[in-house]
Image 1 (cartoon, rainbow, N blue to C red):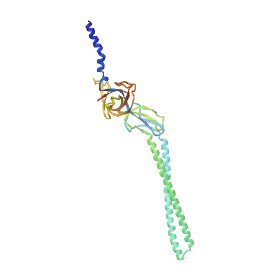
Image 2 (cartoon, one colour; image 1 turned 90 degrees about the vertical axis):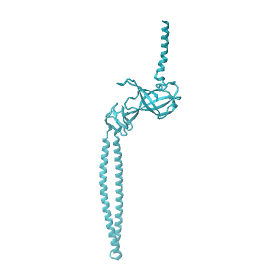
Image 3 (cartoon, rainbow, N blue to C red; image 1 turned 180 degrees about the vertical axis):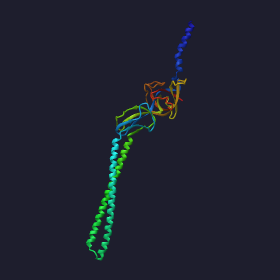
Image 4 (cartoon, helix red, strand yellow; image 1 turned 120 degrees about the horizontal axis):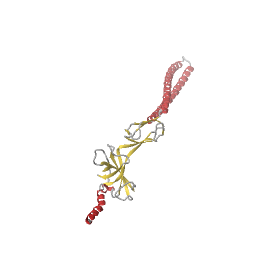
Length: 304
C-alpha cells in the first residue's frame, strides 16, 4: 500500500511539469498573444447641411464607392438656379452689345469712306474744308465709341467667366453632399441620424475594412532580429465551426511594419519574457476572406 501511495505521489508531482511542457505557450514557435484590429475609415462629408438620407446602419456591409448618405442640396440648387438666370441675362446682353458694336463699326467705316471722298473734293477745291473737319471729328468720335463698347463687351465676358466659376464651385459642393464609401467594409459606428446637421469634416460613419485584418504584437529585444518585413507568421484562433473537429485554426499573416522604438509592454500582452521589459511593436496583416477574424478577437502569434 505504501509503494502504491509513493507511485501516486510521483505521478501527481510530475503533472504540472508535464502540463507546462505540453502547453502551446511553451512551444519555441509561440511568440505571444494579441488582439485583432481592423483598418478604420471615418466617412465624413466636406459640405454642411441637413442629412436627408442614410442608406446604411451599424453592422451592414458597404462596397467601395457606394452611396451611404445624402445631404440637403436645396440651398445650393437655388443658388445654381439664380446663377443660371444671371448667366442667361448676361448672355443676352453680350449678344446685344456685339450687334451694337458691329453696327457702330459699319458706321465708322461709312464715315471714313465719306471722309476720304470729301477730302479729295476739298483738295480739288470743290468742297469746303469745314465739311472735311466735321467728318474727321465724327470718325474719331465713332471710333472711340466702338472702343468703349468693346471694353464693355470684354467686361461682360469676364463676368460670364466669373459666373461659370461660381457655378462650378456650387456643382462641386452639390457633389460633396452625396457621401460615398472610400473602401469596402462594415459599418462599425453611425455617428449621425436622419435629420441631423452634418458639419464639414465631422464623420457620419466609421467603417472597418474586414477583408484584411491587422494584428499588433510585441516581442522583446532578443526576439526582434528573428522578424523581418514581409515575413510570414501564423495567427492562431480557437473556433467551434460546424463540421470541424480541430478547434484551433492557423491563418497566415505577413509582417508589414516593425517599430524602431522600444516601449514598455502593455498589460494585456503575454510574452514568455517578463512584462516589465522593453518590447518592440510589430504589425502583421492577415487576409480574412472567410470572415473568421473579428475586431477585438484575442489571438496568438506563432512563427511560421
